[in-house]
Length: 367
Ligand code: G6P
Image (cartoon, rainbow, N blue to C red; front, side, top):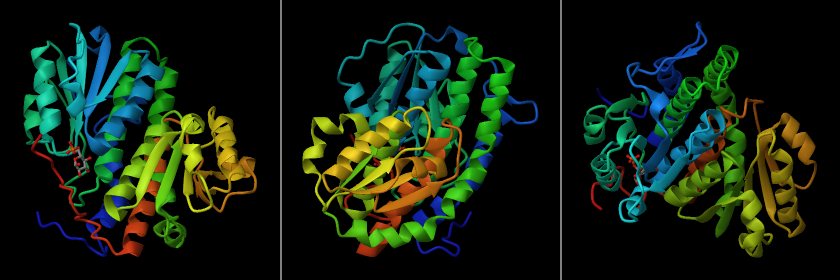
């Protein structure tokens, strides 16, 4: 099929805007919304026997894995170990029989991840793969193939593949929880309902495109940018920082909001924009108090939250981006959008090559 940018200026922009559709498409093969059930495309596999999950990936796919760790532990109470592929292979990980090793990759060809997969197989792990290219090496070598249906991703910086990975991982977490006896049918139905609401919420997030574009000059001027989040929004902070680095070449760091006082707070002054990712929920107050520590030091805070969160956070931010009110489970899928759009518009403002950033490759097939 011919792939073009349609009405968009860049592939990355097109791929950001495609997310509600491709996430819906992906969820469609993992959920039965009418029955209120999660239905993985691998019914014969018995997750009840899995005692530990080891997640391995690189780049943006690694951050999807970090979000999944919170979900697997929280919903299924299954212990999760996670590492980047280049570290995993060489640290002599202890892999016991009965473990599931889960590899996440857009391309299915990343050399480090593929080598880690083979290492895990040799160590007797069941191999599950969340992958966007169904004909890839990782897809071929999987025991359990969990495809994302993002369609071809052309922009080097991953966007739609990431949110589709999150969709698959959320369904997998729910499935795990069910087989581990940790979900009543009602709870499962509620999870399926929340997931099915994700595409509409992502559309609502995309409606803030122009507002985010208006913030771009402020961030484009900065030398350093800090992203803060807690819980599953901590990997979202890491992903936000990675996106900005990749395409705008601005130094950015993602930090666990509560860890900021152990170092990065020393960097805060009026020249450092701080992007705070904080949907309202159980961790909100903690993140807001970290945010106030930044404000007290003159930091310029951009708060990404929902109406209730923005109201509760009060004055003192330089900008807010209002996301729809969503269940915490789907917040990472929705909050991915403003961080992607911010990186995109900052890169456009700086005039960098958005789809082909310098020094980066779409698929890294060398170690
Ligand atoms: C490269 C790409 C990233 C991607 C990473 C992992 O660095 O530029 O966008 O996240 O590889 O790729 P994978 O195909 O394994 O997800």
